[in-house]
Length: 191
Image (cartoon, rainbow, N blue to C red):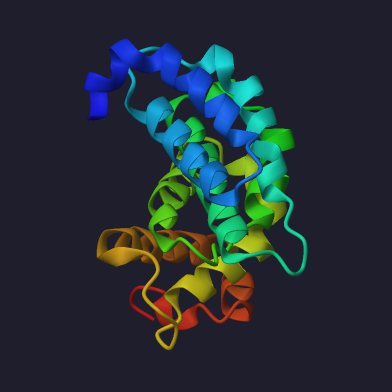
């Protein structure tokens, strides 16, 4: 539907709020995914709703050790939704509160399709607000090594892979020891 969802933005958002607190993990997962897409595609500026939406998504990030796959999908979809909020209006997201929870969920474990918005958000933050990511650099380099691991299942797609490798090259220019320690030297362009 993309932008054609705009006339239904308000009723859909209310529905998604209710579904995010549903007891069924599959319903929560679908609500997280749908709310992220609504933020991404609606022509209505939903940034005034960001704090409420982040609060509704927050419980999905807490997984017990024996969590079901559906709960894992819900968490990955919540990460994708948060990424879409960051992409749409970074300044409306309280990054100091959101980034610790967001980055802790990485690498995604169940729904690799959500890596697309997650990495778009990370790339956007590296371009516009790199200082917000510096405290998480060790974790992020580990995530980058994980998703680029050739022995692991495909997780990010060619376009994201190319942009990630370019980013690794730039990070290598700033701190080659850290990049090498994360096992990313083979991905440094020209190395």
